[in-house]
Image (cartoon, rainbow, N blue to C red):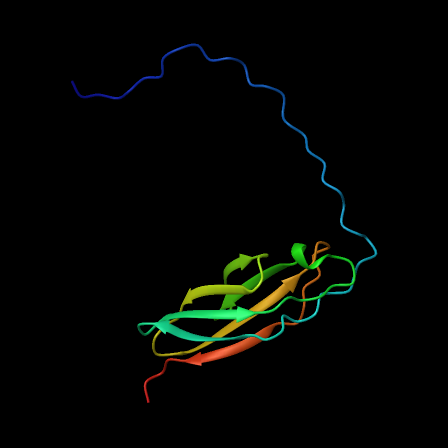
Length: 125
């Protein structure tokens, strides 16, 4: 017999919301981490799959294992990563253009480093 399934059983009332307070970032921390060092990479498989690598940034407040790294491909957010070191990230490039890759280090207060950048040119000669 075909048809829509209907919920069965008794439903309880909703519980009170769970409230969680996380420690605030240091309000006096306005210094960004260092630019991610040793940024390198290239095409690894086929024509468009690339992998990039970079080292640990340093911050005056946030420990290295809590620094986040944000990757952008051609100006669009492509992903984020944290530890473990060494940092590596796989992305898919666009054929026919010069692909710009950027990685930023961001500390717990939200301060963002200058980007480490590279380009991979997939334009046809």
